[in-house]
Image (cartoon, rainbow, N blue to C red; front, side, top):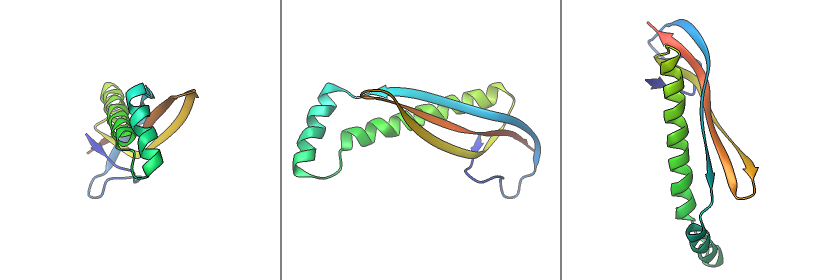
Length: 104
């Protein structure tokens, strides 16, 4: 599956547009991670526990978007984007979305 943030794929022609494809996940903070993050907040620096958690959430959202695209018959996704929103205190949704297309 080709995934790009641009509106097309260089060297490829879009044969047909399938439409919106998406995948999301909701992640909640973890007490153990919160304790480590609090300590890092005191001394400064990257909060690696949250960096790892968000990277995993993005990968899962992408995988779900790819599954949605494949289920609709797409072989590529163009215009891919991420968005995030808080759904409740201490929990956020990561949404990956784009346009599913069929490339020649």
